Length: 283
Image (tube, rainbow, N blue to C red):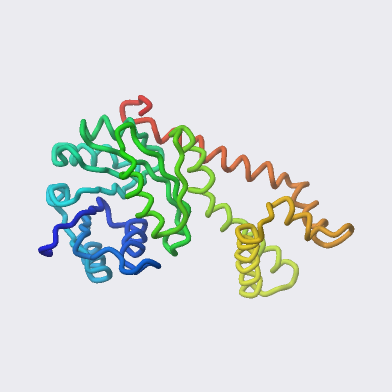
């Protein structure tokens, strides 16, 4: 480990952790990024530790105690199903005054606070996979004892990989998970369907998929940059008697809007189910 004491520790070195590392280490608009020597990743798989060390130059370890001693801010970048085990191992090692940030879906702040013990400040974050390209959407919610500066630390970290919103009511995090957390998969499915339709209409697969992906990218940019909402933009390209209205009518007949809304609701329900701990009680 480098002589410079790490100040940010990641428990788990998977894809989302790697995305955050990339964002933190790359120079931003205001100059240099975080030094690799100020980050430590605790990862049980030796092959993954080697990958992270080679790619980012950060400190790596399999020892949770080493991370807990060194890091002032700890990011729990593990699956919800192993969070209880991780927090149980981490709790006696942390001591007071640490900030713990979780990106695990469905794991409530109260569950974290109970498992990690008094004096540990907590923040819950729901990022999504476009963080891997620096175009993510992350939503933050602070725990009961988190300070304003803690929220600023978390915001800065996740702004390195995309946009950030803060919600004050934790109950909204389930809906956030169902919409922006799971939402990219809905878009990928729509891209598949567009390409399939293009192929059925006579295009080859490569051309159809290329058109579908760039159409989605351009439409998303219009939504973000035109200053117009989705209803306005949809009406602007829906000429009476034209091709777009014919396509929209087909989507409506198949219950498209209702089905997408149902997908968000189903993912929201699953997020709530993940909040049930191993004893069957809600966290």
